[in-house]
Length: 434
Image (cartoon, rainbow, N blue to C red; front, side, top):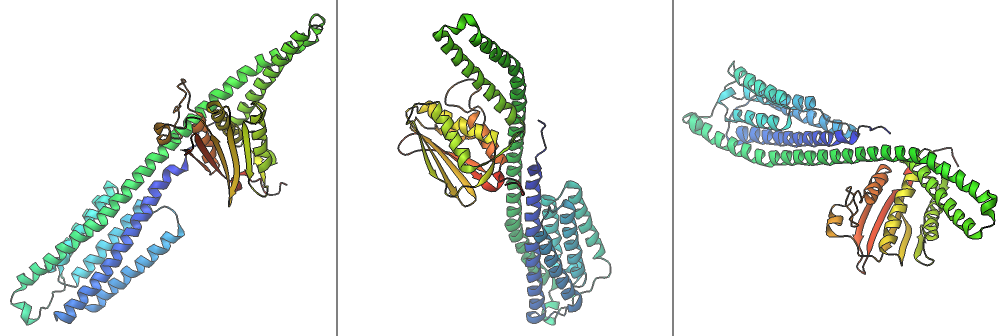
């Protein structure tokens, strides 16, 4: 078995990039609406003459970029740091172009460059953030070169500083509102990404733990194979030896010993099959009902009659590939239930759409609060044995490999309940096989 890097580790970063691009699109739509409103107020209510062609052309270009960005999101895939940097650089250039045609640095809305710098510092890598800072400084320097001056009507021409201060106040309010609204959402996206990355790393660590356990189990199984085979041969020789043939009691003991050795060899064989991929090294075609019935029959054979109840609500049977690892972990859950509730356990099989649902209940003491809180983590056991608590850990990881899940609860009437959810599509035989 070899550890394979988990591609899900890259997914949180990709998802955060897509959500951040979505926020930039929303911010740009607000900019388009705000710019149209500003142009309408300045020209209609205040009587200020503006060069409408370059200003409206920039607004149209911003809207076109937004449409293209939305198409980019619908195509799927990760949004890279380079794409986000390019989007912010375009926004800086668009703002500089509009300010150039509306007074340059004398326009109070020149402070909006600060919004681009803050967003870049949050979203981008340090190098890209400094690139945004350099771009804004270059834009401010360029605005000193031949800007189109604003021609104020007579009622404002006498106090241009008062008009500038009013515009600065509106710009400050706009920046404050946008920073609180969007930076808060961006920070939440980053926190969600960090949490998802932590969960993915934990999952990778758990799967690496399973790999090491599989290697250990496989090595132990290989080591046990030879002495078990030797014992089987010796027991066979003893059973056929003339001096033992007439002793009925000894023959009965030898038969029990032979059965125990064969049982050990079966367990070792199961470990060897389950130590590799989740489907094992020798998958077999069967049906879901037969797969479950065999698990139930194995459990009944090892216990007193009437202590294992099977409720079959699965419905129409479906063909599957028998999974040795899955059978083993389900058997472990059944064994654990029977250990705490030897008088009775219940197994129910049902179906929810494409999902097979297996429920195992008992009349034992149930799970502790700590077990419920840390369900699926290794070495969480109610039995107090060193190295215990791997049964549910293996169950969660084997089922997760198949695209399913598991949950545990305590029953109101007493005892525990374990539910296992298995997608039938993951167990279906390959196309072309009966």
